[in-house]
Length: 244
Image (tube, helix red, strand yellow):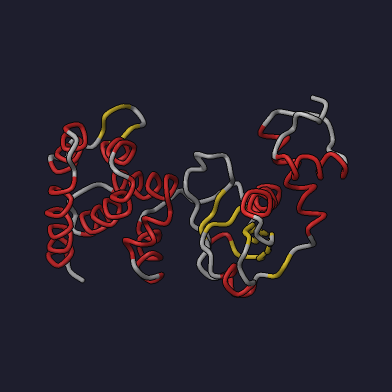
């Protein structure tokens, strides 16, 4: 697709966004992007600020709009990269909805030029923690973590808060197949599109212990978590009964 076609697609989304952005500050940040006033501080872009404050249901569409603008040569990669990263962090479902299919979503991540994950080995294990879904459906997910405890924490959270069967799966992948956002939530998240070969990793008892370690880490507990304490943390979602 040539730059003119990309610009036309961006223009169609732009017209819709103009009609939906009601708040004055949102409109100002939107106009800053159009005026190529892209930096609002040493580490802050106008797209990032726009996505912080706009209505959540618009975030995915703004990321898609800037994808087409970037492909048309109408904004920098930094503005697009910040938009995709922020939109994904605040609510990945809106980005998935805007992209409509995995092919488009993969293209959006590929072109964003997130930094190479130099801290990872060439081949790395990644995990996905979820609940209430089959193995085949879990394998189709996009958000994974290089920290197993994080994945186990998510799986146990589904079980504790929604009464859904927990599931943790593992895939061994080349780091070049991963897209690595900025880890703003300290979850060691990676984006992976090809999890069809992932396998179930261990069992619920193990996931509860690992998830409890993550809970203790969040609450800055330094002591080793025993299985009994892990069960208490899983049941209550609290580390109140664990010595600090």
